[in-house]
Image (cartoon, rainbow, N blue to C red):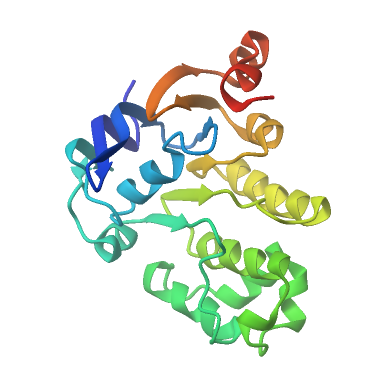
Length: 233
C-alpha cells in the first residue's frame, strides 16, 4: 500500500537512547491514521521526525513522493505537512488574530482565514483581539487547531489534542477533525483518548517500546483487546 506519507524503517535515538526502532508506516491520502500506544512508546517522536524537528538516525520519510527526512521544518510545512504539537503550539504573546495570520504562508490565496476559523470554532469570534496566552487551555487548543485547519494542509499531524481538557472541549475538537475528514483530508493522529481516535480512524498503528506492534483497522484493535494489552486499559 502506498500513501501520501510513508516511513520506511525509521530509527531515532536521543543521547544514545533508542526512542524509535525500525518503524514503517503508511498514511494513505484522504484517510485518518491513528498512532496509539502507552506513554513513551515513541508516538510523539515519530511526529517530530516527520515534521523535521528531529533527524532520523536511519530510514526514510517520504511525503507526496519526495523524501523529506533531513529537510528543515519550515520547508516541510510549506510542502503541506502541518504539525499541531502537544502543548498547544501557539504564539502566546500575539493576539488570536495575529496567530491566525501566521497561517497565511501555507493557505490558499484569497481565503478569509478568520471567517473559516470562527466557523470551525465560534468561541474564537469574540477573542480575536485577545492575547492568545491569556485564554483558557481549551481556547488555546482551539486556536492551535484552527490555525492548522484553515490552511487546509495536505497532511495534518495532531499530537494529543485532548490532553488536560474538559470533555465538552474535547468533543468540539474531535468534531472539527471529523468535519475535516468528511472533506477528504489526510490526518495522522496521536491520541491517548483511544476510543475517540478509533471512532475517527480508518487505520491504526499500535506502538510498543518504539516498535510497531500491530497494524489494522479500528475493529481489529477493539476485537483483539489491544487497548488493554498495550495501553494498560
